[in-house]
Length: 106
Image (cartoon, rainbow, N blue to C red; front, side, top):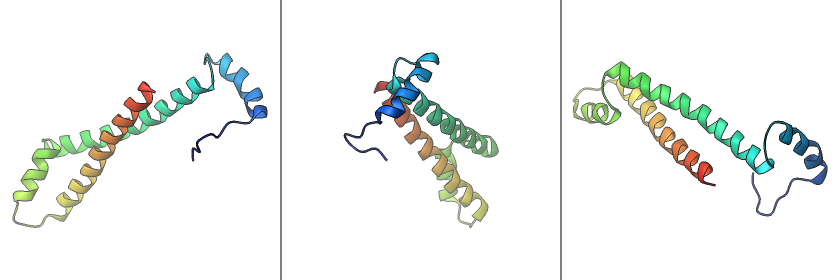
């Protein structure tokens, strides 16, 4: 999506910059940074809620649940599915938190 050296055209900026200034942004970079953070925060909240759901459902952390499930001899497809979903939510949350930090530091 982003190409090195790409620029917004002058006509677009002429129309958008005054709106951004009226909204309190110093420039388009600041507005873009804030919007990216808002999008990431929205997803962070979603995956935090999902991780919290599983922690409450099983009364333990992901790591403990994964270790417990690994030691079970029987097959419990519902719990295995939950493990996969929980792992995805946890890993996605960690990635989003990393991205948030990168944007904040940019």
